[in-house]
Image: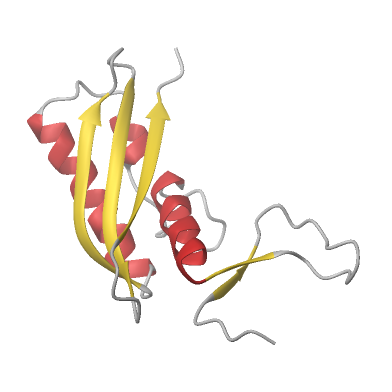
Length: 128
């Protein structure tokens, strides 16, 4: 059996037809998925843990100026540093989408015990 440093359930909760086990994601993919879920979870959305999440979605309704970019970056840094101990954050880039109704976020980090940095891209769009 393979040894994985990190292993999480796949959020689809589909079962493997031959084993009956729920599919899993491992190592870099597990941490990348967790980071993306933390960023896209709104504060107060998690029942019994309203402190987990970021204010990224609520910031989409603000004009995307330097102050809003800093707010989004700070929210992402806080949620990753506080709730994803398997990641060491390097940098968060935030840019406006071409239509100004969306934001493109690129997060660079190390997965602990892995010497190569990884990145996650999140594109969020405001519903009109």
